Amino acid sequence: MAISRRVARPLLSSAFLVGSIQVLRDPRPAAEEIRPHVDRLVAVAQSAGLPLPQDPTVLARIAAAVQLSAAGALALGKAPRLSAAVLGATLAPTLLASRRSGGGSGAGGIDVAHAARSASLVGGLLLASVDTEGRPGLAWRARRAASDVRREAKHLTKEATLEAKLAAKSLG
Image 1 (tube, helix red, strand yellow):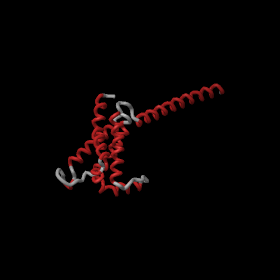
Image 2 (cartoon, one colour):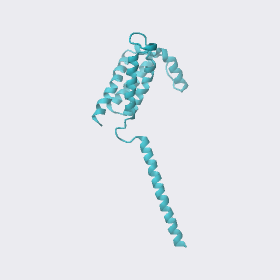
Image 3 (tube, rainbow, N blue to C red):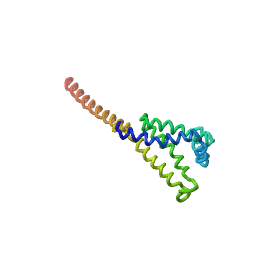
Image 4 (tube, helix red, strand yellow):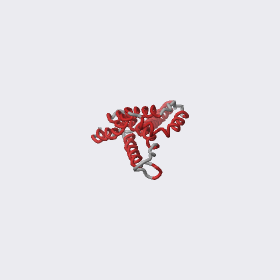
């Protein structure tokens, strides 16, 4: 593993580690932040057949636990692509909840700095989720296997044709 990955993964996951630990210790601020979106989130989850609690505090703790485990795995380099994808998916509600009132807000009450930080993290996670570490990905391996099968089939067809011609010549 390149030194840059050894350094970048823990740095990228550090924001999630710290944030999720804070939410697990005191979920009230996170629960208040997602409260306006809980009804929509629960409705979407239930339409997809996923039972989801309606209590924002429980939802905040669940999200924090998911982030903590995925961030830990990313920091340690265990299933880094999956971990990065999971962390990216957990940021969607955060981006939705970036409407805040108070100082530093831009047009429409959106906390621009918060939204930009979240977008930056999504960008880093997107890069991490597609990083194959120089090894071929599954799509390349599948294309290569299909190409090998086609080449082998073509070779076997040519060989069988020659065998059939020899057999016909020897009979006739």
